[in-house]
Length: 185
Length: 77
Image (tube, chains in turn cyan, purple):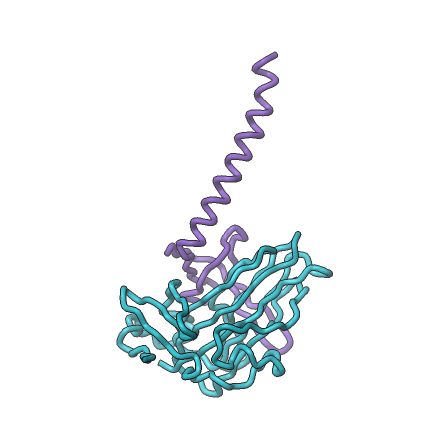
């Protein structure tokens, strides 16, 4: 039985302003089981159903034709092309929740970069759709890997993935999302 | 997780502004936990710290090997 994360668990640090503190809670131990998100906070296990996310079924604002990231299925990833930009560029997925709020964000994606280059993938959040602040960042390599990210910004309206490549040209950075889930908390 | 403070860059882009902490390229992964004006506090997960230490160790081994090779001919001469 999926359990919604109770606010008291995660509101350990009440920070009123997004601009002052983009994230007040970060944990690395997120996983999945039986098609559900599963993660551990201070020895307590929480399970969330991706089809119950507040972002479930919303349009993908980065690649509108790519529905995979918001379809509630943790097992199938998108197949959008990589980016050869050497500066931050939108990639694969983004969602606009319409109103700023406190959201728990869970993101699973496959990241890789062309051999001979370094790839960089980040998750950005915005409260006004103009200023986008980096929340989380990772290097991705040519061998590729599946990444699972759990983060709770204090306040945001939208999130999107961005990426760049160290070389560019014929070298690409890829980010293919299995699922991006935002839960209002 | 280790925390550190780094400068923040604001990058104008197609009517948007990206707020991006400037980190050492050797840091493979981090969370942004706080931003004050032009300074951000980032959190580096333990897994990323392990990767950084392994890379550092490999670099040190390589450096030692290079130095040994440089010293060896002189020692045997």
